[in-house]
Length: 273
Ligand code: KIV
Image 1 (cartoon, rainbow, N blue to C red):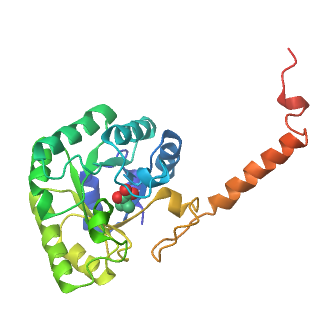
Image 2 (image 1 turned 180 degrees about the horizontal axis):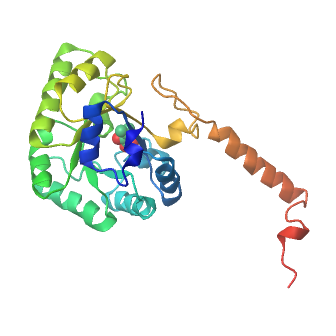
């Protein structure tokens, strides 16, 4: 079932309708103009300009170093390409935690300078003040619970979250809080599928899972992982839809050999006047 393809533009309201009629939401990350064009042409529902750009675009070990200016640069490039998908941008680490005024300024900068449609923030009860302030400015907010990579230094590991009752109960409570404050959806990252299903059933807003099983309202993957550009990241939840690593290396290898063999450029590939 792919009814959402009939919509000329995906909005937060469309995502709500998709949940109601049981159509799954397809979301992928995107960070640049060329890939965003392909994602939009393929009919993706949501493009997340994730702070995973810190890892896959900038080569950092964690998502923590990426700045607000860098996120705005990625989001602006994506927005130039997109006609139909909803574009959501991560508020990066250090731009919203513990200071709701700064949170609002960060969100406004993203919306104003990139033209994006919504922002995403990691956390529950602890960031409610920032969420309230951003929502009060009319900026749609997507929540993010479970494994929240901006807190990796607190967790100390990327293992599955909320396997113990205490953490699972807090996650359920946080999901309800995000819904009641007005978030339009929640990303659930790397949690047991039973817990994700329970949260999904308890909410009227859509849940979008990554490593959260099949009983959620949508799925998200990091673009470079699902295309098989990254060969050194293979968590259980990841399905690789292509082996771009080998395809790209093959093309580079071919080009290098052609240049060395003086085969490129040929007669037809040069100007004579
Ligand atoms: O930054 C990101 O790519 C994300 C997804 C993993 C949900 O937050």
